Every structure is written in structure tokens, then in C-alpha cells.
Image (cartoon, rainbow, N blue to C red):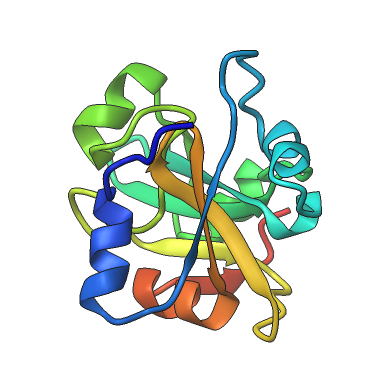
Amino acid sequence: MAKKAKTNAMRKLDAHKIPYSVLEYETADNLLDGVSVAQKINRPAEAVYKTLVTQSPDKQYYVFLVPAEKELHLKKAARTADEKKLEMIPAKELLTVTGYIKGGCSPIGMKKKFPTFAAKPVNKELKMIVSAGQIGIQIELKAEDLLDITEAKEADIL
């Protein structure tokens, strides 16, 4: 696999001198869900987090980090965000809002800073894996560093 250029997420981590590892995986089979990605990079699914972007009826955006094998509970997410209701952002709007595409959305380096929440409990001693901002590339970094750079709060959202 050819070496890929740095993504916005990697550049932001570099700028903050946060160490991370790059994990590349094959995408030709179109299996891009978090559990498949975890298998491809030989990491446990509970270490791989998907980045989910939601919106309120008045277009306030919220980012949620959820372990690959789990599902976001939208009612709990709405309570956490102090909103009456949240829904997943339409995939066609993801690029415009975040600067990333479906399957390659990183919680780091979005166009704007959105309130971000990570499913608790997060073991801050372990590493977390999230999209690097491009399909086929993940980044692995200390959980504490990921929570710091994204300003994520832990929440009961599963």
C-alpha cells in the first residue's frame, strides 16, 4: 500500500505534539464498518471508536465517539447534549459540516469545533483508535490525549 499524505487530524496532532500511530487497512472489499476495520488492523473492536455526527432540529451539531460494536442511543445522546431530540446528520451533509466523508470522519480536525462526547467508561490508561480523516487510515493514540484534543466529555450514551 502506498504511503498516504497526512490528514487534517494528523496535522492537528502533530501541531499539539501528541504521539499517535497510523494504521492503514485495505478498502477494496468495501467493508468499512468499525468491526471490520478492527479485524483488518488486528485490534479489538472495543478499542476502535466510530465518530458519529448528530444534529438537533435547529441544526446544532454534536459529535459522539462510540465503540465500533456498540450503537449510539439517540435519546441518551439528546439528554447529554441538553436537546429534546437528536438525529444522525444526513451523509450528504457530512462533508459540508465536518470536512470529512462517511467512513472517514475523524473527531479531530473538523472544520468547526462541535461539542463532543465519548461513551463512558473510557479507560484513560488504554489507547483508542479513530478514523484519521480518510477511508483506509486509522490513528491510535492514548485515550487521555484523544479526549483532551477533542475536548470530549464522557457520557452515558449507549
